[in-house]
Length: 187
Image 1 (cartoon, rainbow, N blue to C red):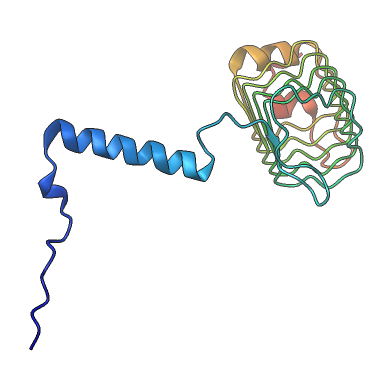
Image 2 (cartoon, one colour):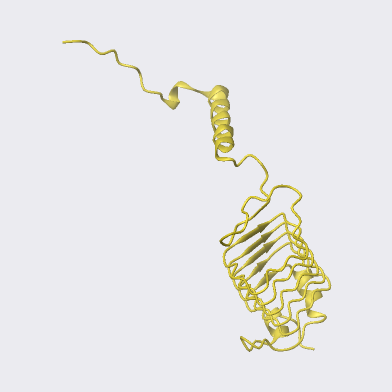
């Protein structure tokens, strides 16, 4: 019978203290690097046929997305200033660190979407549905919200107050009163 030498299995008990911490950190960094997660992401998760990884400096300003189904997509760190999302299905979509100033979201459905640390300065949300949307740390200065539905949407208090100054009308799709859906005080 031939004797097979036994190799002691690797055990986390063999590494203690600082060497263990450094080994864990190094393996984490390597894992992120191999997965391609070490670089900052500038991406639009694609509807079929669109580019996924866009890279730094991608300019989609004034791009026409009107009428598209962009449900559950992600717009991260993009310049979408003046982009047209009119009557676009944006349900569950995420805008993260994106500038969509002066964009047209008229009639768009952004239900249960998320806009975090994004800019919608001067954007047009006429007839838009934003029910259940999370709109935290985003700017809506000068945005048009006539006939928009914000039922159960979560906004920063200062942004909600700014929107209440010009909010009016009733959403033609949901029948929600814009001022009521925003939680504005009675006029």
